[in-house]
Each structure stands twice: as C-alpha cells, then as structure tokens.
Length: 183
Image (tube, rainbow, N blue to C red):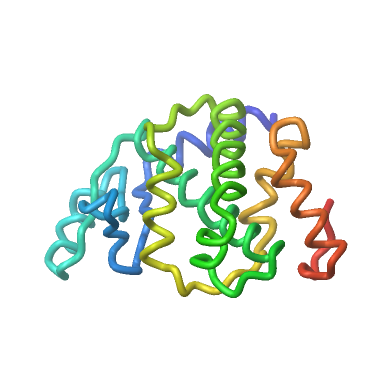
C-alpha cells in the first residue's frame, strides 16, 4: 500500500506547479547568468510571466531537468551549512573559502548518493554551480537546522553512500553544535 500511495502522490505532485526560488540576486551567478529560479508544471509558464513582469528571471524546466536542480539546492544548503558548522565558520562564504576541498568532497558524495538512490543524472559542473551560488550569498550565516527537511535525506542514505556527511553530522552532535537528536 505504501508503494502505491507514494506512486499516487508522485503522480499528483507532477500535476502541480513546482518552483525552486533563488531570491538572493535571483540566483544570478557567474556560472548561471540566466539565474537559478526555475519552475515546472501546469502553471509554470504563467508563473514565469509574472516573475518576468516583476523583473525577475525564471527558467522553465522539464521534470528531468527539475529534479537535479531541486536536489542541487538541497545539496548546497546541506553541504555549506554542515561544513561551516562543523568548522565553526560564521558564514557559508567562509566555509567555501576556508574548506574548499571538504566542500567539493561532500558535494560529490551527495551527488553520487542522489544519483544512486533516485536514478538522477546531474549536468556536469555541479561543484562550480554551487560554488558560484555561494559567492552570491557569501554572508549567509552557517547553521545545521531543519534536519528532517534537509540533512536527514543524506543521513538516511547511510554511511556507505554518505560517509563524510554523516561523520560530520556526528561530529557536530558530539561538539554540541546541533541541538536535535540524530536518528
């Protein structure tokens, strides 16, 4: 029954309009001058027109394009917040500047986990896109929060798929940097 419900939920969700919003500079970066705000679904074109009328950019994506973009946004917030928190960085810009190798390692790890778990193929350049977005929001403060909506996805992939991510989550808990319990 659970599988059937998930399938029906996915069919229902696919009929809806979904949007990935990048408010800071509209998500316009050196790598994505077209912006990162994207939409898909029945009303996506109307939403795009309204955003364009308000001077904002919005890309129309197919479902196959949307899912990787959605997961990239999740990967960005999970990676930069976790690396910054674990290393006591004040901002995501500091995390990216001071720990670029660790950021890259975790991004690649999480992309691999999503690819394996969801069967999604990401466009080349995920690390560069996420680094460019970090440059736009460099002053955003670090903090691992909203676990069930963010890092739990990767935590639940297990240590085989997300060893570095999960190890840093454990370190943050041991150091008292996160207040919630890890499952």
